[in-house]
Image (cartoon, rainbow, N blue to C red; front, side, top):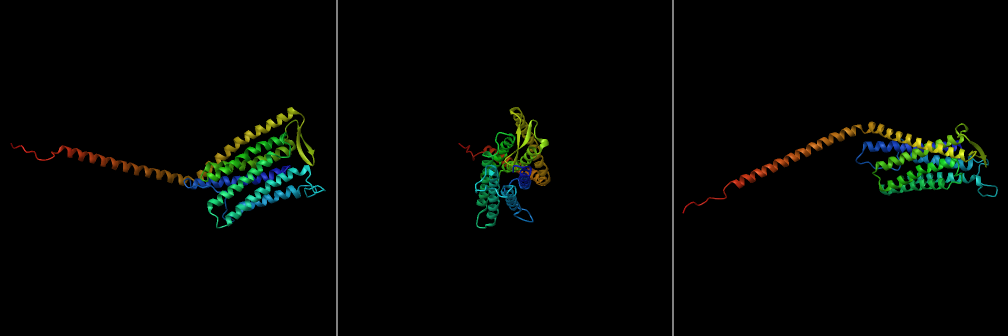
Length: 317
């Protein structure tokens, strides 16, 4: 990271994974609303492990870009073998990518091992996903880059989506049948990706930098700096407004996407459910009617029985 490509490329990866999960969770719930159960990842028809393999490939490429391709000397260490201060953020970013690589690798391995039960496999995969998001949150929160500038404000707001991803992944362990938990988790992953791409373009495109701020080269990296406190405050406020508009657009998109997929995959199931409900209602009415007839018949018999004399009366004297 630290460049336009360094934010847009991983952001696009998060966006694809989030959209893929969102699509599959909505589709699965629309087809099986009563028996819905969440999945930590989704296989494809042609290649079962496409998702974890893509995560591993993307993570590997990210580590290579941060530690070997991006640095001018194609290695992140100083001449004495120590880590220079201007490469600390490269190690932080690569550590996040390594954690997601571990998650994807073990997700694939757990699926391949046959003697593990499905519940244990699901729980362990979700736990590894929680570790990845926890690592991501920790390193962005304790980031060695500037926390006070415009970039720091983007990172601060990004942590909101990471917290949601982490909490919903943990909640999914105890609530595997909750569609809402899976829905929010997928949207938060998608939101991480889009916000990272927005960061890349807004922070490293000179035409999009707020008025009163400029790109400044520091330790081999381009950083947004502002002329004074007023310009910095205005730039941060613009980031906050941008984030609020993004949340509105995200809500519109996610709910519209849900409605479109439910209409596509859940229409037949919906009609079937209505017909089934009408049949159950008719059956309950028939049963209630039979109960009433039986009750009336029993009352009539009881009344007739009470009206008859109990036995012959001897009138002789």
